[in-house]
Image 1 (tube, helix red, strand yellow):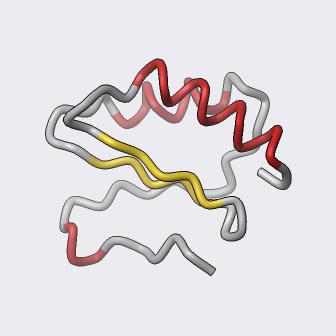
Image 2: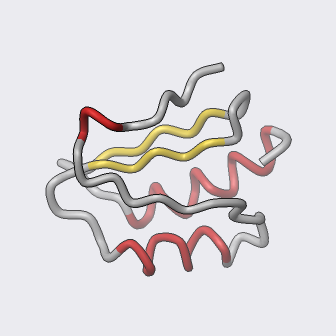
Length: 74
């Protein structure tokens, strides 16, 4: 994601697939998407939906321990 259009495309996909009580945050400065919650769709399903936007996924990480979440702000 290098522009608002790119992050907007990812936001549209996640908005349709990530429902409360789950949530997500997109950080354009760090080009990072963080998704969390108690009842998420399968990890592979989420990454496949993001990939369908045509945006490259440079890395994927499933973090089970919330104390080890990466920083998403620059």
